[in-house]
Image (cartoon, rainbow, N blue to C red; front, side, top):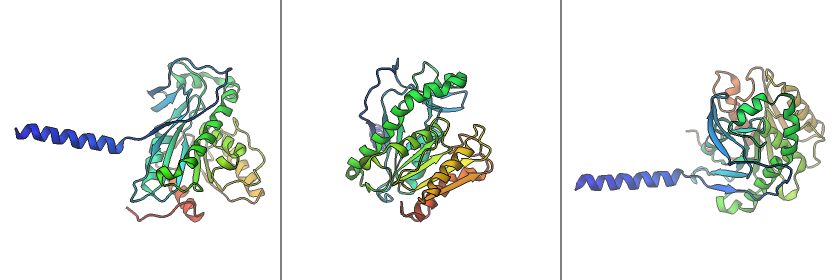
Length: 294
């Protein structure tokens, strides 16, 4: 009899644990484009090519909420746009793991699944073989992708009270193609969906070229590595210079080594700690509040 009660108690504990760790998925409103058609549903799988979990063929934007523990939460939030050439999303290293790190600093995070180039069973294989055609295909979808980013900001701001967030401390962070989405957000916002700070991480400036700095540009921190094999270091410097010449708040961490797509991967390099440098910058700029060391 006692063993039966113990099993029931264990079931209840496990159920409560799962409920506690369950995250909210929010489907974002979006306009459609008749010229771009997706077949089949969104795919989530482990890519042997990239050796990481990916999401592909996203046709309906959504975001997953990673809410900071109430005992740590400080009202700051960050929307995270993973990279993947706009054909895939590196959902862990440039998404979920980033969100969990931010949670430990009291920052609530939203991992954004923005719309991607339509693909079949393996979007990673397709982007690997895309060659010179990639920019043409990406150019058609990118406006939809950054409109998803802008909608995410609007949604978080309109529902800030729900998560006890400060509507004037909403940041947008994007990696590679997600960095192109970040810059699309930076160049196309309106007062209602203006981000309060920007963190483009090795942004894909070939897909979203550097433009004139907005007159009311938010503070920005750029992260990149000189040895980025895609040649993104020069674009990051150009982006930094555009904010600097406009006398806007801007920082740049250019690591000599790190390559491309490092995200939260550990390579035994100084670039492994880029997210700590972001946190220090955010503290300095008054964009978040420090919590006691663990």
